[in-house]
Image: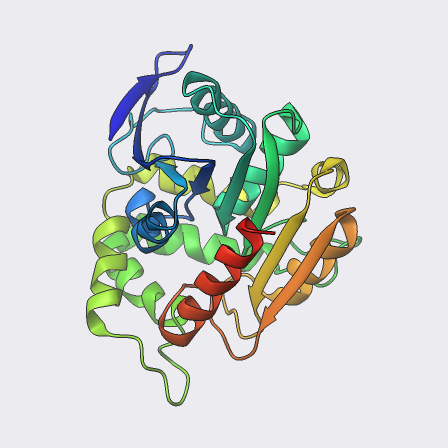
Length: 273
């Protein structure tokens, strides 16, 4: 584990486990790098170097007042990759982290990157517009903002239900997993949490996706209640030149149970391909 300081003076906490070819993980909103611990352990145990950071404003990184947008997130990721002098890396992003990875690839290119994995990721655009009728209306994101502002603790407890599909018949996600989601969520500063809602919902990644020129695994549950697959993975997989779309039947947004086991196996197979 360590901390590096960006050129702008932002301290970014990161984990760096194992050795070998680097696999870099970007987490979703409103979590931090701890959300990836199972996968960090998985790939490090398989002979890779596993790296994950807390996004600015989240977890143990600096709670900056500004810079909570995809360009800054991508640039922070880029500075981490440069600080650790990573090459031939695989970038893995979940949800908002998938947007961060996509913007990094569009903004900084793939000279240090060999592969990408977008899991339940927000690209190309979550917001409903005339050109993107499959997206969610702005009122849905306004409701998220209102919930965070009014009582973020209860909001995060409630959000864990659709996040893991606990509201579906036969759901097996544990209360412990939902409690962990709440715990990590409470570590993001409220300013960062609110600003990030705009970043993940209103950023258009279409051009970034078109610039990706490395093999990319686009993985998504078809019962994702947070980032609906029709407005995300189904479109992204068509915009990326060398993409493989993997759909998990009945799977929610958050990794849990059989869904997590299946993704872990697919991740290792993709890394070895």
